[in-house]
Figure 1 (cartoon, rainbow, N blue to C red):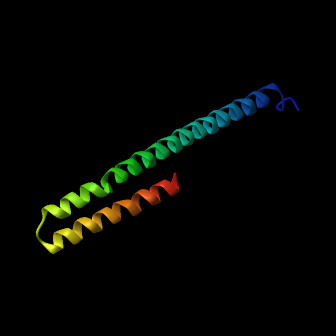
Figure 2: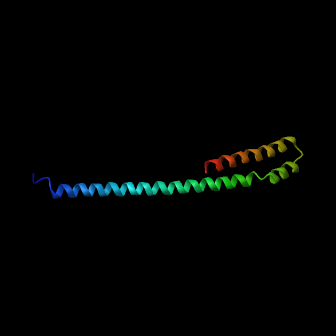
Figure 3: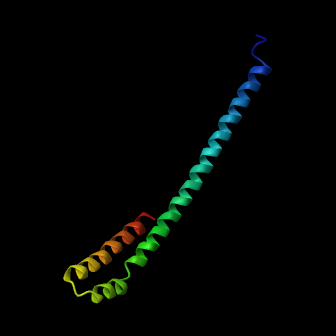
Length: 91
């Protein structure tokens, strides 16, 4: 029973330390990733909110004499508004 002693305990402890450090690194990485994704969603939402500004799209629609352009501008405003709402719900 000499083989089961200090050497095997040290090897087991070394392996446990390595596993613990790897798990800690994974946790840290995923925590950082979650923070980054939340910020990205916030930035995207803010961009969509800027794009959906009703006055800007009304201005673009009023500048055009073509019916198609007016419909396009109104549709873009609605589209960006729905994107902003979706991003806000996910945040």
